[in-house]
Image (cartoon, rainbow, N blue to C red; front, top):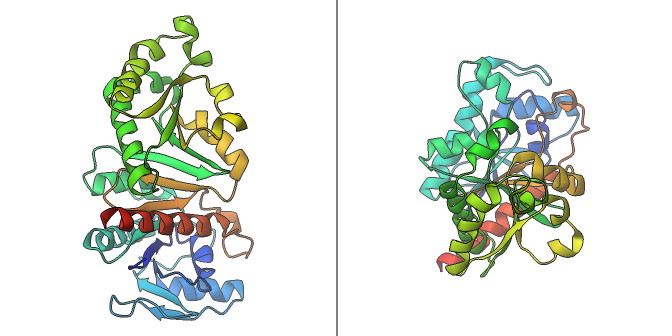
Length: 326
């Protein structure tokens, strides 16, 4: 990997800073984007010594030290205590990471968790990292995919009330999502001919139209069209049998229709070590699969497993993309 990964430390009152401090021992090139004093304060609270190195593009890192690109907090942060005044700081760490990715300074972004509520409390509309990164890069559509437990699970819809899901799944949306999924599995995961299983929306995948007609009227025409182009996509499969172990061995990724159709299975198999991946962006972005865990901030009990896995996946994606470009 030619360039370092940018790690955004997330909500300053949460476990993001704690997790970032545990990265000093990593041998891969990383840059933590955070308030340097916040990291020093949290290290003292945790009773650990972490040497910090001031990042510059000319001196991206030093062995045994944590490379830090300083972005100042608006107000000093306390572990476990949210402060909406620091919402602009959180968004600035993301903006700087994006800028570095788009300029070629960074190989990708790995994000520690943010707190959506406190950003909204600051008067800034914010529904999540995924949507924010898409908006800031003028990307019309991105796809959320989680990896863990031997699975890759992508979502056709993300943070929508269940009542709105069926109306949201249109032929153009489904086709666009499958094209993004296919493209990124090839380019960033090195899978020449991805095998994609598609979950039906309704129980029993609609049971021939008796339990809903979305499969017949929306899904099957799109899947047939893409199959005719050479895509290896399944017909709609009932979600209750899709995740059987013998089936999962036959696919590279599963596309589910809504958030709680696919993610409970994946999180059961990989809780604390799953990785959230945003497909379709002009750069690589992975993230932890957990929240800010305010009650664990500053206690030393935060588990760094998901962040380490997110870094590992981002490195693999960057290497595949580099090979693809060359």
